[in-house]
Image (cartoon, rainbow, N blue to C red; front, side):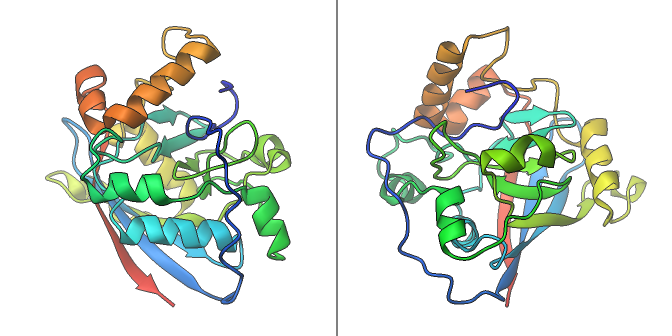
Length: 252
């Protein structure tokens, strides 16, 4: 796990190339609404619009995760100003909770290689501009459930490393008691500014590398998070912003 690049879940010795979805609906799109809570702040919600022809395999995986409530109960575990907002490393309940449906889903999902799969599907990589969303990746280029939102124009850093955007943030609004202070925002730089001004907790930055941790220690922390889920977060980092609800609002 490197400090200057978004990393995926813990490495797997049994990495599978997920090529079971062909690009059959190149014009498909969807919208997914995320509601979140930050202690001491108004609640908020943002909408991501996804495009299948940008990255069909990533689109299919993300839509499946959203429909099956995988992201609900997740925390923004890597919130690095002017870089990325990262979540979805493992099931919110943790992989130890075998009876939970999201834990079962996590175990069943195959790892896939976005850079290989999207190219094979004939897609054209979109730039990692501010507000776009991608899957995080392991050092070998594989991914499973972790996603991140670009908080800056990161194309010079991430495009060449095979990160494929499949959508972008299109709106944000506060929904709590002070919601009138910010009306619905649709410009991505204004959305990111609102998030970084305190609507989302950024104080922890990268929780895996906190305290100058080595790569090895960061990977251990990542494994512990995946196993323990939200219970681990609440004990170690209770102020992290929480995704309280996820809804697929439109599919076309």
